[in-house]
Length: 80
Image (cartoon, rainbow, N blue to C red):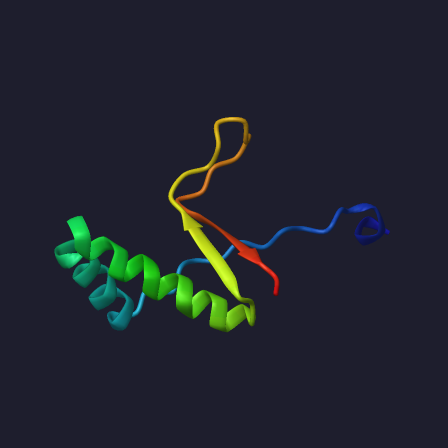
C-alpha cells in the first residue's frame, strides 16, 4: 500500500569522466581561447546537428535573465 501512495522518484547519477573527456577538456582549456574558441563551438554545433539530424543548431553561452533555472550552456536546435 505504501508503494501506491509514494510518488515516483527522480534518480540521480554521477558523472562519467573518462580519460578521453579529460583530454578534450584540457585541450579546450589550453588552446580554445581567442579566435580558436570558434573551432570548438563550430565543431560542437556540427556534431550536434548531425546527431539530431537537423539543419541548424546554435550553441549559446548563457541563459536569459528571465529563466528561473540555469545551466552551463544550452543549445537550440532548429528542425529542417
